[in-house]
Image (cartoon, rainbow, N blue to C red; front, side, top):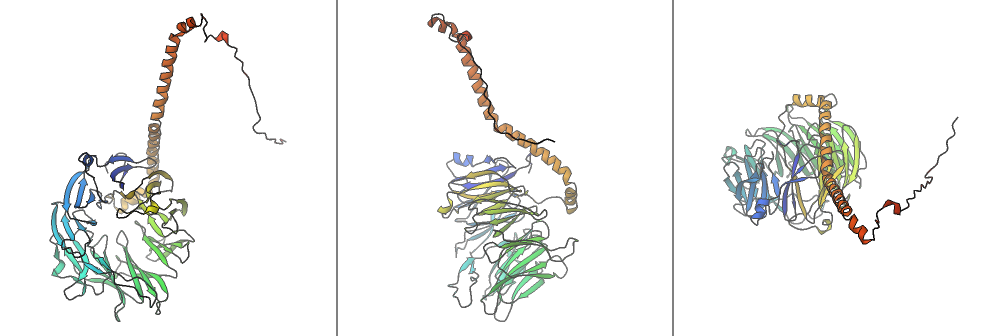
Length: 547
């Protein structure tokens, strides 16, 4: 954060290397640290993946024996956390704690909660395996054997609680909420949530949303609960439900419930959205029906808009909506519909307004459309076989990558492994290829200290800041060009100096050469006849009639 000029940082994993690099607009990334200290000791800095803490103050590296954390400007080791076979790590939002899991069913110490300040274990848990949601199939088709998945812990926004799904002693469905750092059950009992399939904390308040499917004569429902009071703030009943997904707005103002419904015969599926205004009195709900298949949903990080990818063909449509009108009224309003886009996911800039309509996978092979929802401007580019898209925290740079998992190589991707860096306007300014490329992760930044009024003032005076930043960018471009030509200028100077030296030595041997040729100076100008000829040719001619 204190770097001048300000730059973005990213961590990459390729081959056996782990590197932290500085990135800035229009310039190639520069290496900051690549595990040189560890290499001197014959060790790898990281054996699996890396993960940044939510505010970017530390970096975690995965190892077969546990987790190591690194920090400060020289990336010195901050702590070691022994947990064999760890596969998953989640920092708490305020970086006071973390939870690690190895996802080994039945392991009594499969999940561990740590205090990052004291580096001590707060409590360990057995890995809990719960039935996974059945696949959505036509009526009468056998879903196959029941699948199981690990129940993961999730942090509240202020590090006060950590929760996961589970079963009580009677076999009932519950959400177990633990207070941190005591790691005791909130109120000495779990939250009763019959049939709970999934839950998510609000990103800005101690509110918990969960959904449960239909059971017997009870409809499916979405429930919003206040913690620690356990007061039910809102419940929405839903019928003929096959599946639900919960999407909190990053600012916690809205909750979207994506609902997949079926007809009574279960032969036809259709989609809808239930949109809850969480901060409004009585939590009003608005519904949005979709006649075709929904492929993706995404909130604009700052604002009131969201995007939906929907359609039944090979080129679906992309629709944008706003939870407010242009006058600021709380009414769901269509913004724009883009028809026939090769797209199956949406990736908003952290600053909003800019969004990438991405077509990844074998169906689209990496078609990327940079779209400005405010200016209604777009540019389409391609990164062949792209399967990962990451914005840097400033919203100025986008990284797209072709990556393979560490657990098993995708040989069809190995010819294309690597990443590209783009400006937010869709101009590619750097690319790198690797035989094996596993990860690219931007370093997060703390939340802005500006209040809404100060941000509004910045937007109002944007022209003034634009001129200053444009001048700084121009200076950096000139310095970058000068640096890029430094080697060329040095090589040219070296050749000129060498030519001058050779000419001087040649002149010093003129008398000796004349003596060997019976007094004839072969370099004398009067021994040569110099003829100058000028040849002209017509390249192009044009006749014009002048009145």
